Length: 133
Image (cartoon, rainbow, N blue to C red; front, side, top):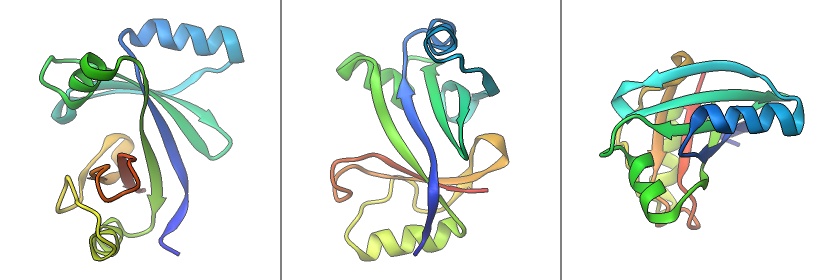
C-alpha cells in the first residue's frame, strides 16, 4: 500500500483571513502553519485535524491554478493530498494505473515536503497531491 494516510483536504478560498476566521469561530480551530508558496502562486493556512490537515488556500496571483479554479468554479474542495513514503514511486504506480501526472517528477512543497500533482482525468475526477514528508 503506497498511501500511508490522508495528508490534507485542500479548500480553495477567495479570502484566506475570512476563511480562517470562519474555521476559528465554527470549529474552535486554529492555524498551525501558514505559508506563501511562490511557485504555486498560493498562500495556505493549515488547520490540524488528528494527524491530517484542512488546507485553506488562496491565490496570490491571477495566473495561479487556484485563481483559475476560483474563477471557474468558485470556492470549494480543490484537491486531496495523500501522504506517501516515496513520491517518485507513487507517481510511477499511478502512471502505470493510467493516471496522468501534472508533475512528472517530485518537487518541493510546503512544510518542507516533496510533492507531485496528478491530473483529475485518469484519477476518478479528483485532483490528487502526493505528499512525502
